[in-house]
Length: 224
Image (cartoon, rainbow, N blue to C red; front, side):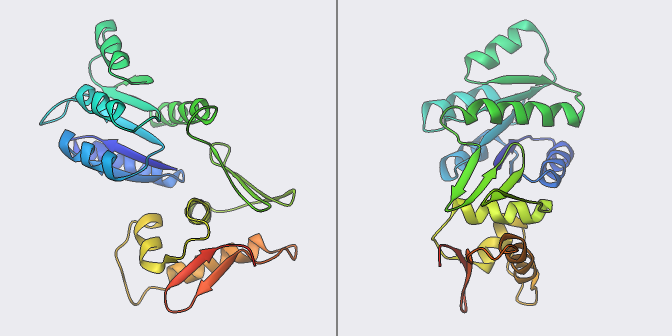
């Protein structure tokens, strides 16, 4: 699942990105309201985490902008302000939940999971499917032909990206950028290594091959 974190305090933003990434989420970071609007306009996010206090505007304006455009997913507001009035303003601007600073990271994770579950019953699905392969993004569960498959955090993120782009060839560079947050490195074989490990787990019971090599380019998830 892809999350946009909007936080001008770079240490806090880095902390949130690291923690969310370690829990299997793909994370983009914006440090200003204008950058946040640009990110939200150009990408499809499953969740927005917005700090209210930003250098050029505030998170309330960003939330209103996103709601007025095409974003229909959950919004979690972060702020040092903790009065009832502040919370009401955040909810009126389109936020779904409100977390006051300082907060425990485990509480933020719990709020994220709860929001994603709630929206899974609406416009944003928390389950991805292709053929006999099913992925539950909140429970972090993968099943193929009634067989549950245990994946590492990075394998899960890799498979999620394939499922979100099924039947579309994706390059190694694209996978590095979106799954590993890395630029192109001609000497790295990390993508090939992880794709091999993922293939072995998906096809362990003799199931038909789902991930195919696109010679000289990358990979594609499709039926045989």
